[in-house]
Image (cartoon, rainbow, N blue to C red; front, side, top):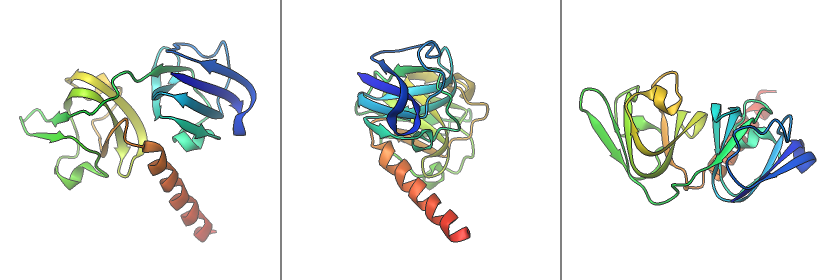
Amino acid sequence: FQIVFFEDRDFRGKFYDCKGDSPDLHGFIHRCNSVKVEAGWWVLYERDNFTGYQYVIGPGEYNEYRHWMGFNDCVRSCRIIKNVSRQRKRKRENTNTSLELTDNMKTVQEKWLRQEVQSCKVLAGSWVFFEHPNFCGRQYLLEKGEYRHHSEWGALKGNVETPSRSTNGIKPTISDSFEKLRHVFHHMF
């Protein structure tokens, strides 16, 4: 496992080569504008001690923070995603209504009419919940275990629009979204 953080865009400026979980990156870098993931899947956190907004990234190069869907250049902690394997996940509501998933979905509404997810049990592996459809918005990493309330995976609300396995090539989807977004803005101006 290895990830390299750079203070400036395009892999420039002061850098920190990280090979494991780090609860406080501020002693090594003051901001983060680009990242190279040499090996493994990682979750980056906006605040120290693994809190704040989460960004899940896999092997590849991210030459600016928007390419990992970052809201700003603030990355204060990171950790390795250890449960990367074929997995099953079950989302369930308090009314005993449930939905079991084994693959990514662009939107939960494809198979479930609920607007919120109140609890979830990850049977194996790791999953990422996205706040909006098509792998957009805030990201929440869920590893094997039971989550009795959305606050246990770090969300303020139970809004889950897109569930995704953490090993299923999220980066190309995000890049495609940015290309579409860039195309829309180009036509607007």
